[in-house]
Amino acid sequence: MTTRNALTLNTRPDGAGQNPAGHATLPNHHPSDALLVAYGSGSLGEGLSLAVALHLAHCPDCRAALAEVEAVGGVLLDDLPPAPLDGLTLAGTLARLDREDTAAAPPGPAARTAGDPALPAPLRFYVPSLDGLAWQRLAPGVRRVELLPRTASGGAAQLLRIAPGTALPHHGHGGVELTLVLSGHFADELGRYGPGDLAEVDGDTHHQPIADSHRDCVCLIATDAPLRFTGLMGRLMQPFIGL
Image 1 (cartoon, rainbow, N blue to C red):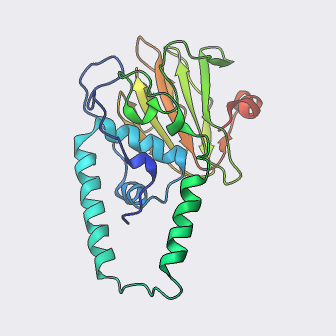
Image 2 (image 1 turned 180 degrees about the horizontal axis):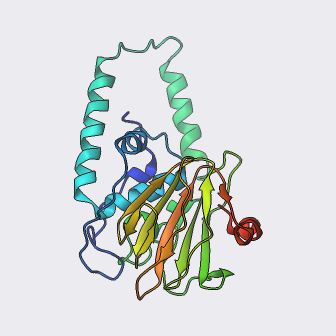
Image 3 (image 1 turned 30 degrees about the vertical axis):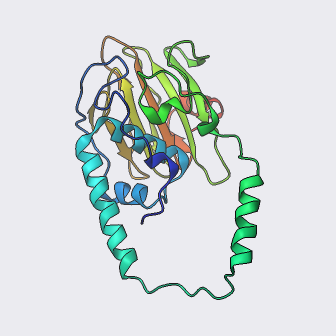
C-alpha cells in the first residue's frame, strides 16, 4: 500500500482549500473509502488518480483520511515476511542503476511547465492555465480540452466547460466516472456539486448533469471505461466526446 501513484504527490498546492478563482471552499462531496484506498495503493489509472488528487488539494479531511490509509498500509507491509534476495548481487544492482540513470525519461505531464499557481498543483502538470486553452466545441454550450486520450485499458480524462443552463446528454457508464468541479456548479439526479466536489458514479448510475449557476461550470471528467449515452444526441456526440 505504500507504492503510490505519482499523482499522490503535491496534492496540497499553495492554494490548498481554494478554487481557481482564489475563494476558500470546502467540498461537500468526497471519494468513497474504497476509492481512497485504491488511490493510496497506487492501483488507479492516471485519469482517475488525477481527479482524486484534485479533490485532495481542496479537502483537508480527505488528506487526513489518506494519511491513515497509508499508515495502515505501512503497518501491513511491515508485518509481511521479508522477500528472498536470491540472485541479488552488488554488481547486478549497480548495473541496473547505471541503466536507469542513462535511460531517457519518457515525455509526460511531469516534464511540462509548472503552470499557473492559481491552479491546484496536480493540474498544473497538464495545462499551464485555464485561460487561453484551445477549447474544442462539442455542442452548443459545451467545450472540452482533452488531457488523457482513451487508452487500450479504457481510461480517459478531459476538461469540460459547460455554459450556464446547459445539460450534458443523459448517459450511463461502462465503469467508474469521476467528475471534479474546478469552478461553477452542476447538478444531477444525485445532488449539486461545486468547487472541489468529487462526483463518483459507476455502472449502476444513469444521470444528466446540468450547469445550474450563473457562470460556466469547468470540471475534470475521468473514466476507466466508455460512457453509454441513451439519447440520440448523446449517441451522435459519442465519437467526439472521447469518454
